[in-house]
Image (cartoon, rainbow, N blue to C red; front, side):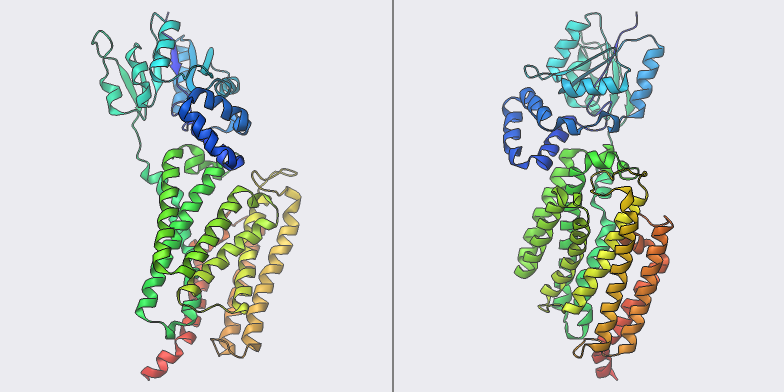
Length: 480
């Protein structure tokens, strides 16, 4: 009879580690218990795993886990070869059993229990006792080396190089077939950083752009550093948001391919990256300007609260998103000690409230009828209301800009015709955004769409050109 094929779970059958995700879920839903969770894992790991499963394990849905198709093919081939297929994992047995019940392809499943951590030598001893005539093993990490040494061979996925040079107790080589080489985390990490989203930080230059004639090279140097500093903070909070959103993203039609949700990026790497970026940006901000640091802290705190809870509160979430854009404008103003006018902030707040509503409208429109949006507080019937709110916010923003251009006496740009032209361009652009949203031609993120869309870029360049021309008029006057 052919040797049984033993499949590891974490990093092999699925591209993630369930214990790591339990810790993240604890941080997301029971943050006050996170220190206790870490203490339990450090002092008694198997008991800590079971405790975490009881605390947040119900939030892990086996139907949406990132299963590796190569391993599923390996299981299917094992079935054809007449092998017994077993799932043996270091994750808690309750979770392992749920995975087994979902897939229905295993003859036996076993995970860790509160008295035994089924990894490394413990797993090897368990399998040798269970299969004294030998077995094949599919694993992925250095903890599987002891298991491979006691096997008759097997398969390696993302395994270390030493896995393919093993010898058993009799010094005979162990035949481990490499199914997939260990990938570099750099590419999925860069994708998770969403460097393209740094384009949103251009808002830091809004107020300085209006006062370009009054600024020197030192001011622009600090502003550029502030741009990078804000980008690091934004990327760090994006990773944090993705960590907290792993279960919801897996249930989403497009977000399920994000590196953390798909398992392409590991939780430990993500945690180290977000800690380094958030911490580094705060230190840099402190060195640049204390007022700028205060605004950056407000941005960070707001983003964290948004990730924890506020994003799940309908309508409040879009106001929070709009406020994050406003904070970028305020940050740039603080760098040059020039508080923005109430007119400008009214326009910025309303235009980005409209874009935030467009983002939610697109998500709701793509949902099934009467269905809820994963991780959000909206249902399909909210789409008409979101459309109305968004269009109203958009035109309120344009009206605020137009009124400023016509009535404000001490405005930076004196030419009312230029301001009305800018308002007309922005009105046409906003109308197009909402028309595309209704036609389901808009991406989930309208701001990102605007950065990539040629017509939007032409509108942006035209508006920026008009503003800079008028704002720099005093410079031209001295040159003529």
